[in-house]
Each structure stands twice: as structure tokens, then as C-alpha cells.
Length: 288
Image 1 (cartoon, rainbow, N blue to C red):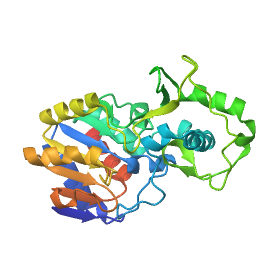
Image 2: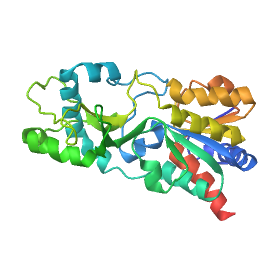
Image 3: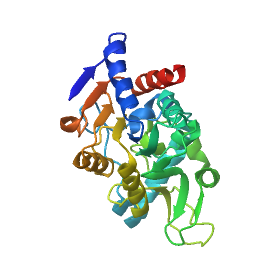
Image 4: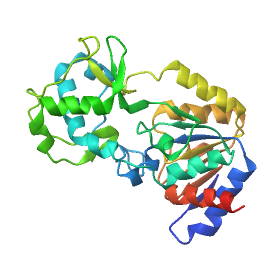
């Protein structure tokens, strides 16, 4: 593996040339993105440079579905933290990948993020592997509704919670510890009246829908290389596509600050800010 650590400006020549060369040699890229693409938009990530948890693990599907107290805690945190997600705008990494798609270099972009920022930047060939947090799903009747509408209802029922200040957490919630959540009101589904309501994202302990996995594997069959952008790949749902690529003999490159689960099989690794690196590559295609 070629590993190019970078701290500007030393990274510019060797790392950028290697990354540009990789992208030019492989015109049908299968791209996997993670939280590192969205941290510049103000959305925190879960892991440190060693791939370890920086905060408690997120709520599991089993706990959310099995315990009303857990759902109250989740939606209270989400009420406070939602504005960070709702107001987030695409960063350099999102814009660069949209530009590379526009230049015909991306077969498919598979994102582990749930923020919708790739589509907001203009990417169209996207699989939201873990769903989208801007939609809410009724677990009884399967009706989908906008998260913004639920936010308005949560605020109407729980106006005092809107005054709370808390640090933003990943996936549109906030760090509210030591609070009494027992009086927090969570509405049922407005369509069927039963609920419970859940963000339309894949929680830990929940399976990624088969159709998304199949669509990604089909695109991987058409691709000639994999580019990992801003992901440690510690979650198997994304790492599995690197495993499949290696089995097919496809080269894999990663732009990520810190350790990834795939370090041993990478053909190229650039340890640099993912937005700066990808923007430089996209600018190179634009200039040419």
C-alpha cells in the first residue's frame, strides 16, 4: 500500500498526484463515504483517528422499539439537536464528489451518512445505505413523513425543551444527560394513530434493507475501483463492499484521517482532510 500522510503544504505534490492518478486510471469509481465528509458542515462524528468510539454508542433498534422511555429520551435529544442537522449545508467533500459525478467518474456513491448532503450538493447516483434522518417512519403502518413536520409537533407539545442548550451529537440529536425525560410527549403516527415513530434510518442492531445492498453490489460489478472518503469503515455495512471489491481484484483507495478497518488491503491511502483532497482532485478535472 502507498500511504501518504499529509499536513499542508507538504501533502500537495505527492499525495495529490497519487490521488489524481488513481481517479484518472479508474473512470468508474465506486465511492463509499462516511462521517468525515460531513464534519465540516458541523455534524459531529462518532469515532476518533484510531477508529474508537468518542462517545457512547448510539441507541439500538431493540432498545428503541422495546422501551417507551428510550423513545422519549431519543426524541427529546432529537428535538434539541435537530436544528444543527436541518441547517447543515454541503461542504467541500460533497461538492467535489458531485463534480466528479458530473464529470462521469462515479459509477455509484454509497454513503453511510444519513444527512442528505450529497444530494443537496448535486450528486444523483447515491445509495443512502443507512437511510435519511430527514424522514420519519411509522413502524405500524409504514407511512413516511417529513422530520420537519414532527419537529413542529414536538415543539408544540414540549415548548420548554426548545429553550435547552446542548452540544450537537451525530445523526441530528444532542447531548442531554441527567435530564428527566418522563414528561416528554412523543406523538403517535398522525396517519394511523398508533405509531411508534422512528427516524427512517438504520439503527445499530437493524438490518440494512436488502434492496440497497443489492443495488450497491450491482454497481460494484460495473466499477473498476473503490474510493473510500471520510470513513473508518468500522461498521460492517460499509466495509463489506471493500471486502467484495478485494475479492474481485479491484484496487481500493482511501482518503481518511486516521486508521481504517481496510488499511491492510488499501492500494493507496491519503491521510488528509477529505474535503481539501477531493476538491483538489475535482479542480484538476475541471481545469483539464
